[in-house]
Image (cartoon, rainbow, N blue to C red; front, side, top):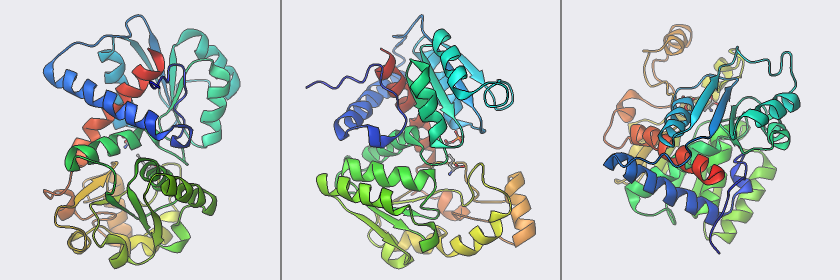
Length: 330
Ligand code: CP
Ligand code: NVA
């Protein structure tokens, strides 16, 4: 049966079937071809969407804005300080107001419960632009990038190094299990994903002919990988005090030339960005001064290497977000 996700929320990958993911990836490829060829696609003229951000963003915000405008829609952006939500108005009330004015709502915030609550009351599709638990729009961009580089998803050995229980670690584990990639989380035990989510991922992986593995051993984790992926060590919303323990836990999981050598010769390096690979940022410089390290989750050498596909990945945020918005609103 043809896939139809019109009117559906996009809150977490667990709500989506492998067929629906496949459909969104194919749609994104079409949109990318159209954009590259300069073919207009204002298919949603007359509709309006609102982007609610309670945390900062570059890629996700710009992707929704460009995607919305390319599709011919009006786009409103509300930054962390400029709406009543949470301070003077509940999520439920905000959702019911915005749902009367807009055809779709993007939300980036803290707990997954908040975006689920927004969706419950909005009456229009809600897209999760990142919560503490999940980052589902990033997953489509990552899968599209891997497929572009290797021509397939099934059977790819995917290794995630670092904070494996953050929004990226959780989401990538589910994304791989759904789409047939062999997932390895290479992290200290303290930062493994929650047992219940690992169990769920293992069940999905068994259905889709792939594996889910957790290891503390860098050599075992990186060996024979097609993709080495990492993310920042301290996520948005976490207190500055955690830097010290996090650096202590994660420094041996830094993606450097040695890690890339353990992976296959054809391996690629991926990162959702932003990344601390030098001291050219305020936080990067502060950490260097305080802890004496000038590169964190990835070395500048790897970040700038030919194996690094991070900017292709960033571009794909826009094409894939356009696919989600179109498919749920058309
Ligand atoms: N990868 C990502 O979500 O980037 P932003 O925080 O800039 O949106
Ligand atoms: N784990 C990161 C992802 C940023 C896109 C964060 O939540 O800050």
